[in-house]
Image (cartoon, rainbow, N blue to C red; front, side, top):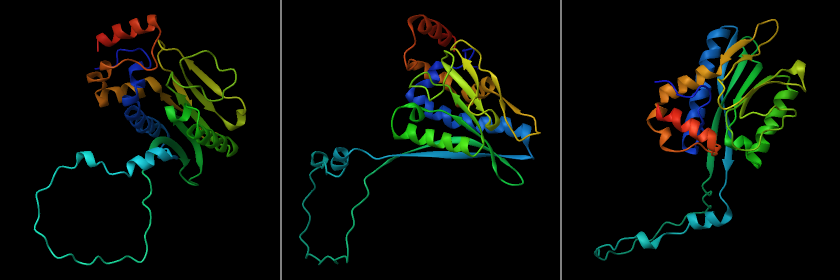
Length: 255
């Protein structure tokens, strides 16, 4: 059953849904694009890795045994103690870290294997102020300096926008940045009620652009994941305006 929303489904933006949606979106986009550009180009899945270490206080707590959950043990027979073999050295265990992996898409020339186009679907980690945002912005700048095409898709209403001057008022956007147009980039601004556009995927001249129907990608992910069975138990985040919430709730009711 298709998504009841004409464009982006705001219920997909919930914290417990987005990571799964992001993981499905990129391979589906790769499939759609690959059908148009093979065998001249290779479509590959890459992974952005973000490593988060917990604060010092949390590391101490994680290493403290919780005596409250230890159940009393029956008495055991006394046995002669065996001398422990001493180790020549000791090391400290590395504190646990949270490793976040987010897929992205690469289009490479089949002959040279050179990167031609990178496609990124933004996540909250890319948008929230902090080291993850800075890491993504550094990667973005590297792509521009390498004269690689960049397709950047933001389907999240939450979080501050990435640096883009003269971005029209919108809830979502798709950006296609070509080296020959730098510093200008083509923008597809999207409002919540709008159908998602079909955008060009640049290749190397003289090859014509591929096309990516964003609405079809979102719809495929929605169908295959079975989102209609559980995402409407929550509410869109960030919250919608009162009018938009009434509109969204009515559409969700039919799902």
